[in-house]
Image 1 (cartoon, rainbow, N blue to C red):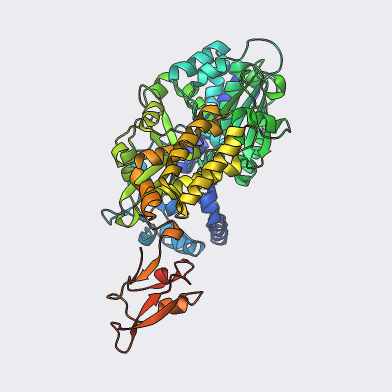
Image 2: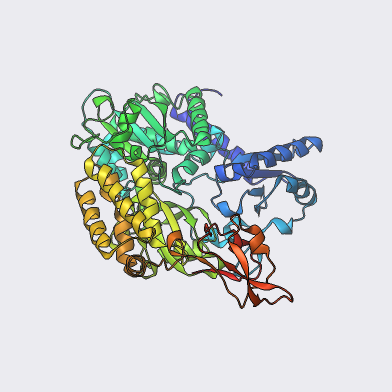
Length: 629
């Protein structure tokens, strides 16, 4: 690739790559373009095999000049992947398998006939939907800011990113003063998407305007259970995050940027490394970028999976080769950060929003969202929800819209119980909170927080005491142990929750749990400890009757806590078929003298003393005769 040494050459490359991309999406007559989702979820379902099979057939049939097949970033609708999209018609096929490729090739690519059985079926109308934008999951979304390019461009081809507008924001930034760039981001209202929600431009402005080394750091650690926002952004369009880091680096006077990414994200790391290498060869990264005095280089450091390294000072320690433990603040990293030099840490999504602001202008970004929080937010929507996936919605979208319009509601007609936002640091919001708009202030006022964007939906079958125990188990494992309130206090909270879930709790335990939670929150060193007990406090506030049932009645209303429930065979429903007894691994199921519905058969019963509560009997019963009680 010829090097780009000035603004004119960049413009020429943008125009050339843009024309190539338009040709790909709006094919000439007789030409077709096939794109296949290359996100981690779809790759795990062999989307790479789908690409390889398409390319084999294209070669076998001599269609190399008329048909192309490429990988693209995450489509977001993870529960329906792998995806195959055909241009120029924009036909979207879902849940595609390698064995389906020949049918798509013969019927659609060669015959011009849609493969009906692979179209998405709307669960409400039962109608098949051909176009992506007509699917309810996408209708409320804006996937053009943080998720810009996902599902459209090949993330391993920097020319496609350039054709979609990459580095136009950088070009504009380099024509401005550093103060003007910071002011542009300030006026946009962009707040940090890593959880704290601190104004991004203000954070940049704290860096001293002095000579000497300064560093930009991208936090791609993303340790929340069920979260995959940052991973998907990097996997789908690494150039967007690199450009955001470069603009931020220019604004604060840094010449080096560090990407701190979890080692468990090999595809994201691989694509990021390739993009950095290709951009260095192009001259977009390196010395005297676009003929200016600005020089910048990117480096990658792999995290070892420590949740606490999502905290910026622990992350800085880890990059320096030290144990990932938070530092007392002040001094803040903007004054004394990486290797004692002024540093700014922004998360992946924050940096991915920056190119849009510089490319389109702060007014466009500020026009989206609420007065408290501008722009969009990316959520990893999971749990008891029909449409599991990665979504980008405007700030101000309500939780009800997120769960029911985008998420498609609760599977099996079950009743919604709660949504956990903010991961282990957040809280559970209930039905009364469903009309809460999604922004930083509203979620905090409701008793939770935005966090980095995890959103776990729970239904009537979830035990909220068990949910609190799950998050506290995670926090105990991830506490760095530096401060006593977090190290000792969270373990004590877990012990109490375990005692309650084992059916041995007392009302006094609830008082101790609440008091201890306040102590941990008010005395821990970093945000991990300060927010560690939010799941406990929020579930105690929202579901006091559930905690009371555990410690007073010694019953788990959701029948989740094993020591307070048993499997029971309903005599009136038992057919006497013996399937449950045959499935039982410990021979805990026998017969009674009571005749069953099948002639010559007898009603079965479960011996609670022998039962290990594995659930094999209930899952195997075809007549719904086994229940939890």
